[in-house]
Length: 198
Image (cartoon, rainbow, N blue to C red):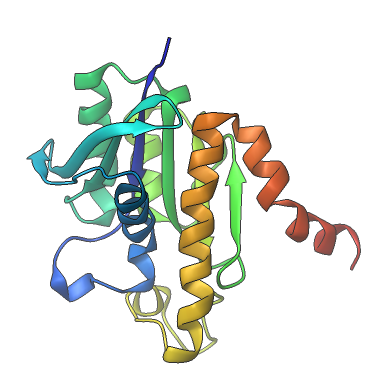
């Protein structure tokens, strides 16, 4: 029997934030919607949502519209309404620790410095849910973190970030069709090797 999953991309609403580094989670969800003919056009739970089927599972795709640091309130409300448990939640978001265009898949873990994830973990009272992090490149030394994540990608970075967004969407498909472990095996290997062999 297929289960209902929630795939939430984190970002900030409105044209002023479109295309910024902090919004790659939104972009990955939009890619999934496009690839699976899911219309994300329902405004409810302070989010824009759409329902469809990916890899045989019923899926709610969500773009919280609360602004990043309150994302968890929207995610919590959607999960409560649809009866989605944390093990059927996948959150996609940006990460400055991961190289531009690389992704990292995890089954659980802390929020790091990410305010959107801090909000999700706080509202759900658990960090036991899958997440797909998209590398947006390291913050340059003279930049404040908040200014960097709200900046846009340069032309030179565009190909790499599109690759990251596409990989994140593929990772979600693998999680839904197989397991988090399979997605980790496919996408985390390269980075782990670098860590193990300095």
